[in-house]
Image (cartoon, rainbow, N blue to C red; front, side, top):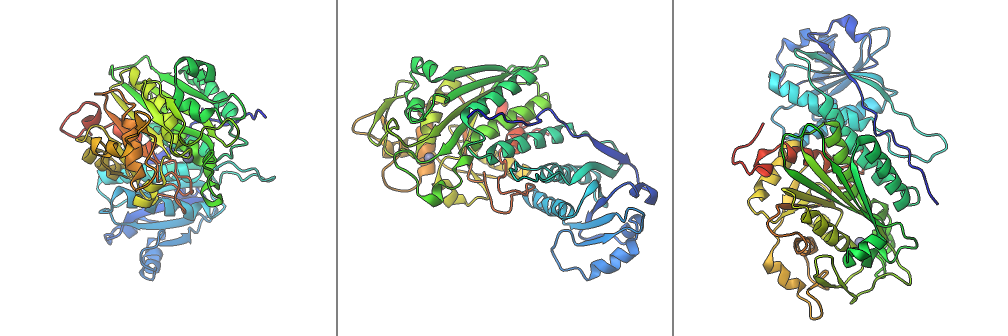
Length: 508
Ligand SMILES: [Zn+2]
């Protein structure tokens, strides 16, 4: 029953850098060479590139819009594969990342080996920015998701070098962010008989040990004492006692800022829908319903590796949502930890139940900012497709800022309203509020409005409904259906003064 999950979360990839214009002999070292130049390239650029004249001729015939524009080989002993991309520097971050994903795919479709990336012909700032973006794409693009085939796949890219830069680039933060995304995707991809609550919690304990995170594990008995009736309504249907709310704390010695940030994640190991059982199509991929907790944990890993000088709590609500004699039912009334009573309507709306108590516990610590991640509603996907995630906040002024941060980093969100006008739709005859509305649309808005009732007042709170947790063919820089969306977004929120310090001006 108890699986041991083995994941090398401590590993960091070293990125080598070769400064200045590379010589032809330098290029001998690499199996794969990506060169990205401006779409409107200047004539002189071809003199800088090996076999430039020939490539220029070939590129004339290239089919417009494909990335790479052309692949070729260098005439050296390694027969280095050449992938040339023509990039429009006016593209938005999302499109630049998607371009980068395609460039890396061109490499991983081959046998790969050592990879060098050379971005040239752009302004220095853009060159640096885009080199970071394509490096992100390489780090997530090379990563292998769990495989249970008798012959397991191996990583195709064996090393990554950045070449042609004038100044050494600091890559540690980009590597850390990718490590966070990779862990998130790895956990999310695991089937629920491999990643069960026990093995998940064991892995989290191991990580807390290795990274010096404080850890508190609140099991059912503790949660009964804490009167977490909303969480327990869901977890009572499990066939074992492994459900838990976990609190991790990252508090480095280099704290510069006394602010406390809380990350909260929905960790439904498998969502059958419960007593209101899901049909086949809707249940098929419900092992991914713990993705919110994986985003929170992956973010904490990235924050730790980036050594950010802030204090972070990370709350994970881990349970299954099962059918069975003990499972909760429609019309059950339960009392949440903050004293509010909830009339159960639909047992498949379990995410908001487990988050209700978890958000309340998180907000008791009076964080300066809290954000939760959850694959919460189907209506959010209907509203946005899988290309965007939904964002909700109790601080209306943040809406445009949150949207802008998403646009700037390429993990995009779209804001929706919450508030008292929607709370009316959750008015209950028998309890303080209904869990969801029995009919009518906009469940993502009602779900967020419901969650708002469990966040202590005055604490700035953001809820992300992860409609882009999966997207066929990948999303932005990520090539797999499971996107790991959220880690990059969160790290960019933490860098933005307008959110954490309520500054009007944008930080760098
Ligand atoms: Zn559900």
